Image 1 (cartoon, helix red, strand yellow):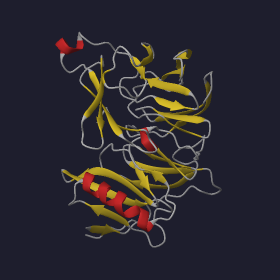
Image 2 (cartoon, rainbow, N blue to C red):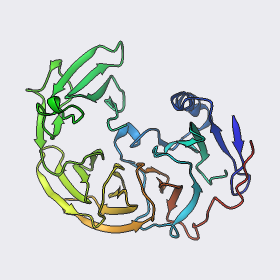
Image 3 (cartoon, helix red, strand yellow):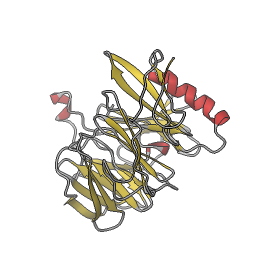
Image 4 (spheres, rainbow, N blue to C red):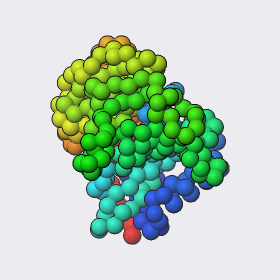
Length: 318
């Protein structure tokens, strides 16, 4: 373990370069309940349950490199999304052609396309995995296949792709065996993103695709409330949207972050230009938005005189 002195009072950052990221994450999950009585949790890609939603959280509407910056710190190359457990932020990066795992102090900074889904979120009994042409549920206890749904797209093999269709499916959980013909609540074919995951928030499903085009559907029925309306932030999208406090945040690869209001019509609240490419998905915790660009990790929060950089006085110890 190598400790690196960071900026600010008594700062430090821990670099676990010798342990695989999965092991570090597992250790953090096992030890965190002992260290934190009531931890802030954004424990994985897209946060609690992989939903992209912070139920009790909030984040600033307006922010930028010189606006509402609580702190920022330079990042090594990489595009992993920040995860939060208590007062710690976990990320990965590449240094000297080696993957490293970083742990940062969140409170003050004192220096894959498909994600498995655990269901139900409160007391998981199964893990749902999207694969080639198929969605499969496995029992957490024993790993037996519970049910499967066929018809997902895959563009890696042209022959397989001809048998599939690019579609958004709302699938009712439960059942046994093949449920393709019995458990589809609704499906849609327009407004589908290439990379970003959809987000279900306050009864609606939101999608953001390349070109900065947003769509919104009723969660229960699939009714289109608006289709492919412009966010005013052009370019490709790789980061998945996140949501809290009635707002949705979507970041373009070009580095423009659109904030729009949750609702039946599209209302743009802000377009925040960060001036660097963004591929990672933001995290939300205690009123802050944690956002990784090509070279920086930002903590944005609406606080008086919050703007300060955690890069000053950075001293490395090896």
